[in-house]
Length: 71
Image (cartoon, rainbow, N blue to C red; front, side, top):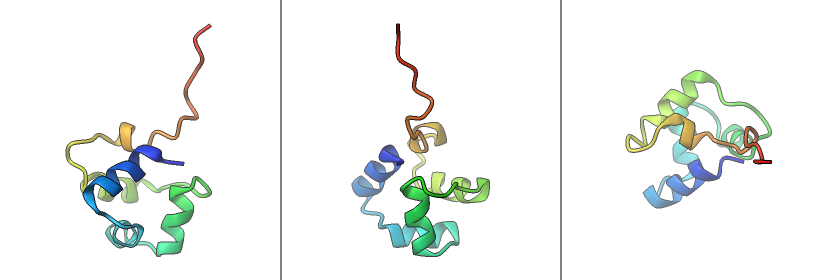
């Protein structure tokens, strides 16, 4: 799941429908992508990042899978 992106959407008042429209995909497809069931395409990422100029793509699309525990 892309918690940072979802948080930024909430703060900006951007719905899943609006995000899907911006990315040029169906709302159902966007829901699957936001929940980590399917991958985002590069073109979709670029369009989405443009909605959040104060955030970079690495922050928005951090899904937590690359985190490593210190030890």
